Length: 547
Image (cartoon, rainbow, N blue to C red; front, side, top):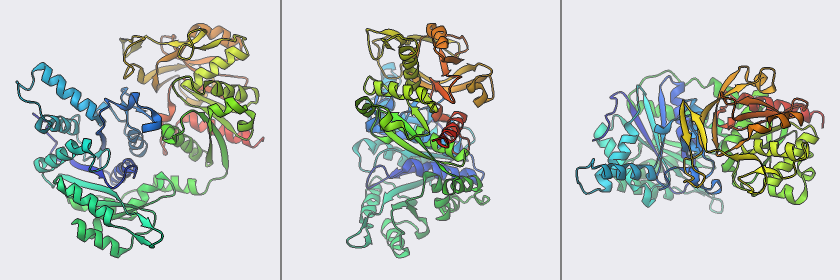
């Protein structure tokens, strides 16, 4: 038994071919933004074929950052694009993996829900995927579902079969297939090659799916005769072969797609009349990015070499720059390099220092050194999650004189300034975790309230007493060190409502030194920059003028 769809809702399925990392997430987010700009209500969903239950235990160097929603779902980084472009908070109903799908199917089998039937990919797995696609919907005009991976991946086949079945069951007037593909340019021949796209579409057709729109990624302009050729051999109307050229920034993509007619073709396909897209907010963002009043350099002292591991952070800094009409130039610094060569060599030329989240001991002394450098040289500092813990440890080591101050995550023989959290409250319910339990899903995840101290920098930044921010961590700063921190010049200015968990620390005598236990970058958007990043970038700009 599968869920029923609202008869007015249209479903758009986005697939990718030829190679991975073409930008399906950005394409999905951009199309959603265009449909919103025409007055439609949209919902975005991601279906990931890998067998992990979620990306929470995956190495960020392999898969990029883990995006966390308000309800505590650990999801693919594409959900960050969805939220940033649409402004719609994602939920657990918007992200699924094969691991979750198979887990649900097997749980049902164990309960006897299938009445003794032999469990198979078709219909049991495909029906479970359908239930995910169709569930928790209200009055959305469009639901955009991105299928992870590349057409031809063996693990993606159940998803392609599912969307084929849905198109049959819902009717082609309610479903559309958008296929993102690559047109490689061969410099020695001076030609764009359409053959990879033809083969990708042919493979999609073998699964019973005929794409309705082709988004063709290319580094160069696509001549009309090439579009005509693609249309003929891929059985797609010529006007629905859409060029997806490299853009100046990801925030230029919605306008670029609109200029190519993507949103017009979607509306025509479904027979919908709607006003032209209002792209004024995207035009404003593009104008600020192309005509900044200046540039500020900010150091990010991290440990992961893959920059996708810091995707939301990178974008939040960009948003802070947009709000200040400045371009933020990020200086990525490996924390281990600071351990080897000292902080001055890497941090003496920056306007601000940011230490982000992370797990494990590698690079931690470099992060502590970065926090110390910011404190001693009056450089604006923003610590996030692990970056807050390192700032607290630095203060207790070098100001309070506790030489062995550390986190129990990093050392069992230390003054446990930061310790493992095994119990906490969430929405009135007691959450209990075991030290040696499974890693997946056992952290303090999702949105939690925080009460701010009036008169603090944090209070001034937010302009309100209580806030809600997203968390992803297992270790907490111990509140018993509050008095010693205050004596050492660091105040705890944000706490959980019961006063037991420090959420924000700052140094009132410093030009701008704020560190938070949560992840503010996850809620920042280009047209609604997070206030912490706006204030931090402004402080970095002011400091740069003194350099």
